[in-house]
Length: 286
Image (cartoon, rainbow, N blue to C red; front, top):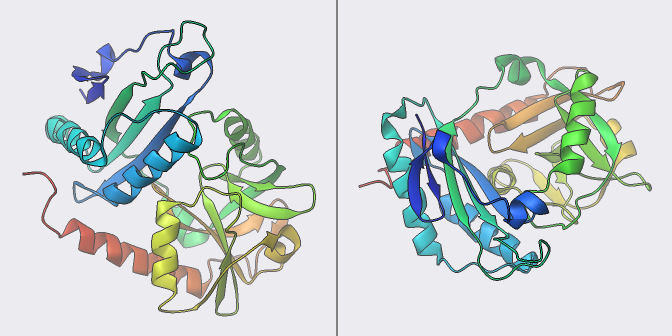
């Protein structure tokens, strides 16, 4: 059974609880990070912790743990789960709003949760055949912050899956494209890669993709419209568990020739090589 870190204690997953007075329960108030391992090693841990700190600050919550303290807790939690038999692990780091006597106002006592679980496998066909995504008029409530409140994302993703899609793309009333529920969005026109940069959550995987792409392509971080996206030569999404996933259909519109494009396949390979290099490094865990 998996072991979780819950507010100062390591407990079996089936005994992991927090009080119902916590604002995470009452109001969906809290910040989180999701990262994964490669070869058992946490990938981009420092980057995820830095973004967690930023999210907490944007929400007006306290973070009484230093980055180094958070790092030690995450690594110890992962260490305690080595016997769980995971092929690879997901690590969720959550800072809750803490208990509140008025059931509304944060009172400076956040809780820290670290959950380690088996990382889900994605379908191989996603990468060889591409996927469909849908669109929804929506936008992140607090851009730049990774909130535990996923109400709109959950609704959008359910609607997408009901239509045979794997993701839902947020578009505003003016047709500007932002991001998906749990992914960032990219397009290729020729050898130029473009991705939105405003009012989004800047993904950690997105940052690695941009770094890799700058060595191979022209890269533009700028506003994108849905009209431009639908005319693109290639489209793909990215995320922690997904990596790079080719998109071959948006709503009822086929992208390009309806197959994963060559530039997207190049980035899939480049990111895989970067992950393999990470997996071959010395483990964080002593």
